[in-house]
Image (cartoon, rainbow, N blue to C red; front, side, top):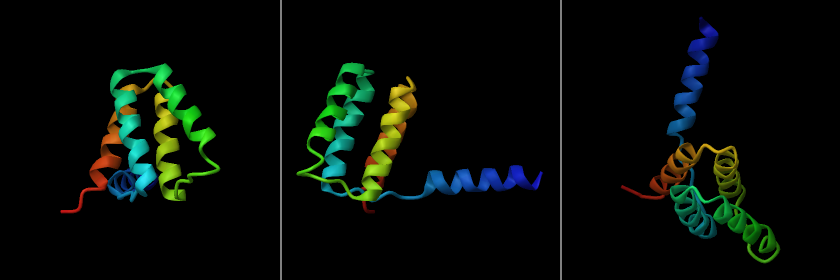
Length: 97
């Protein structure tokens, strides 16, 4: 019982934690949101290829990279709606109130 409660608390905390994207991460999140919204496997592959090719000249912060890679993994597994939600949360996290 304690383990279940702990897992739930950790999941809720993780979902509410705020990710701060760098400028490049924000741009990628915008493009990734569009790709996820369109359920475009071709767009996903193209965006990932662009990121890999430009890694040497333009790097993402570790936090941005981890968040973006998580969305890519979700989208690649075919969970487009979840990936879109993750992207939306990343973008909402950038709004300061």
